[in-house]
Length: 281
Length: 223
Image 1 (cartoon, rainbow over the protein chains, first blue to last red):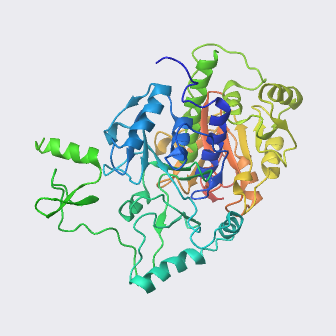
Image 2 (cartoon, each protein chain N blue to C red):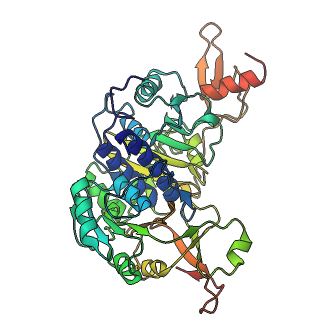
Image 3 (spheres, helix red, strand yellow):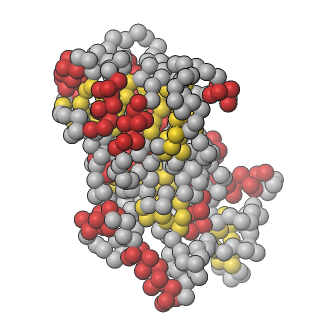
């Protein structure tokens, strides 16, 4: 590595600022800690929050995995990996179980995470109350008073209009029975993976200048009603056409020639691993 | 220590502290120093590492020690942080060997943040003589007059974590604050050997075993 930047790109003062916010975020699970978000060499909205967290915590011994929409090879993931590797020289992997830090947009990997792993999620809109309250000063008061009426009403409106909640992703959750939190645009399928998970999950929103966290073994409950319980995407009876996996989050595609609907694993690394184990590739 | 070495040392130390905060009551080790180093601040090396990890010109701090002025001036000179009273400081540094009453007072008076800004609650960097991790139940039941066993529950803890510490008056001081969550303080304990335990405001503590002959022996006290 030719040294052109400080290790992990940031100056040490920037790392201290982010590290202080991370510590407070872990201490108050689900609370959005404001921090002095830095300008990054990627556009805001492209994962600057997650990237700032990763750069503030990463060390020489870490093994990094970056995914975007479940894929290790998408443009966003590849460029983030390139930047981090160029400024740290850390090992990059696609294998979930080998990674010590996993930065992700939109997915938590299918392979269950372990205690020694850190999940970093990129968050575009960290405020779960933003739909009905555009003022930041007002949402802070609502969080202070634990007044989450608006979040419940939002779900209630969806049920009245459509017969079910229509949150495809970013379904709000209550953390440690106190804060309602946006779990980042992960599908509902992944929401339950946050509950009592053995790993630490950190959330970074660069544009909105917020960091928050879910410590290991913490209660995370999706908001729902007794007569409309929370439900994940239903993939019953469907399996991946590449590796044959079922019970995982699947992408739906259409074969243009036959017009047939096909399904395949959204987590490409998991799919490749499963296919290799079964001798399919 | 060169700037590069220090950078990596602080990074590894931060990961130990972050893990400690994510798993309250579990004992973690700060990375050991390969070379002998002198203290710039007049603090024990592990506590100095915590100071360098968190304190800079963006935050305020306060030193609690028998002779705090020199330490405070040294930290100000190197980090450009603002020294302030213990009621207003973002970071309260309680030096090793400091009078126990002063440590209790620091915990009692540290700022708790507000419902609007709970992150404004202080972080106490608390130097202690000894921290210990029980390998099994026998370690806890064994009468070791120099250790008190503290059990921790709450977010980050699956069932409970137990650690040993040489004094526990800070536990009472923390309890007496009666902060209403999410307001509160974080306490990061660090011993002279570089072992750390973190207690975030979300944790519940109970003292499991008392020094022989003292009231409440073996009875857990919820805090």
